[in-house]
Image (cartoon, rainbow, N blue to C red; front, side):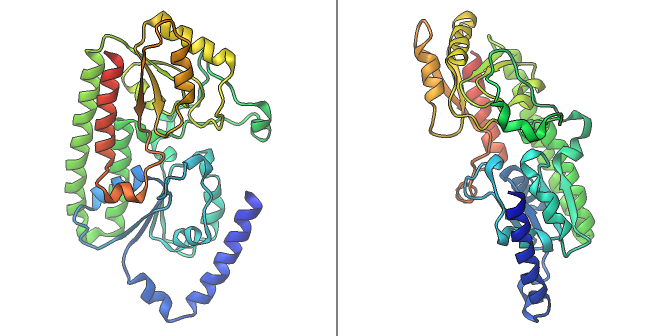
Length: 326
């Protein structure tokens, strides 16, 4: 991956140098503010800060076709967009290791770069392996031995979102001070909606008869469960590449469903719910619902065009969560 990215960057920079000598280069940018985001939540937050977009900023979402953050590889076109943009927003975890090389060759030295994990600082959580969770094969992490792995899914906390949106807004205002007041007002209105939904989550959990979620899947929702004091069990950690659960994992999770009297087994978005199905079939009653929480890792540009927003997904997740806990 590292060698491939170096080759892509070299090719991009060669093209960039040629374009810089061409009169068409400036025309292509139209003098508009260029903002590049890696994933959907970042993109949607930017669009809410911009509102009616008085500066006609152009916003790009790189992962726009449903490719998972953990398996994404930038194209030459992606690298070129990053190297010339005014603002670049990315998560900053292990999945974004390619970003460091891409930014080293940036032609816009005034670019504002936002690393979500850096913004959140000490509140970022390490990945954890809870009881019954299947650990990844040792050979998958040989090169990373001794390194701390952080949970990248920070956007799944509404409280994190409020902090990150404010940081993004401050940066947009610094790039376009002429419209700063508009962006401040947009941000205040949007953060109020985030805080209101956070209160709804708190109330739903406070009134729930159960305080535990069990996932027959990866578990990217640690920030969400920690926000509201929920316990959880899962087949894999959030960034796991595993797709097959061991007999021991299935057995443990099935027994835990019985022990806790859970009426739902959770999954994340996607069509492969075989592990959750197997867990249900190994419980005593075999009648649990399979419910899905959306981690926004497969949201596409088509979804955006169809009106999907960060808030609408989190509202949908609240409804699912309420069903799972009652």
